[in-house]
Length: 189
Image (cartoon, rainbow, N blue to C red; front, side, top):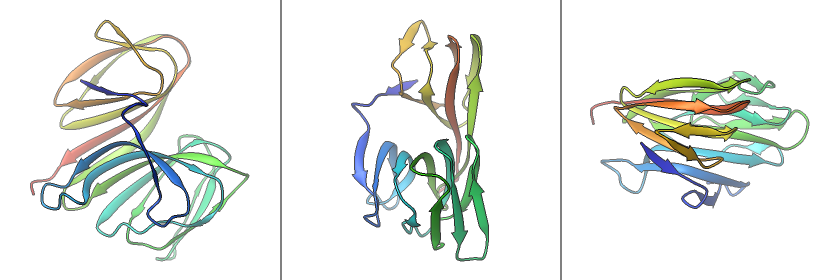
């Protein structure tokens, strides 16, 4: 298990210059080191507008905080995220216009190079203390958004990211907590 904290995260501008994101984890693409194979980030969205283009990338976007957003995709689809924990999936090369439903929000982004891997993103919530075993078939990212957590006998820092590769850990949640789980399977490249 690797632990990443706020000191490891990187604040950066959006590719289209419309805002800023906090990159929690980035894995370079094995064939194109200037590009990413995997990127996991949190964005604060203050206003609507176009999304950045990421050709060849599959995106999953989850609502962490706020009233939500409506997305109009260039392929004609409309997606609405208006409940905490909802996740929308779409291709990074599509034009996406975003409209906020009620003010600023925060979202979680899992982006995977399509020729490198596949994955899924989901929100997990606990109301009371619980012990939970998490296994990683290939690669797992777990962002501990809120709550008090322990793993392997140590207290984990708030807002940290855990990275697991083909291993299992037992986590203890001490009271109400929220985490975002990204499971990733690498394709052969």
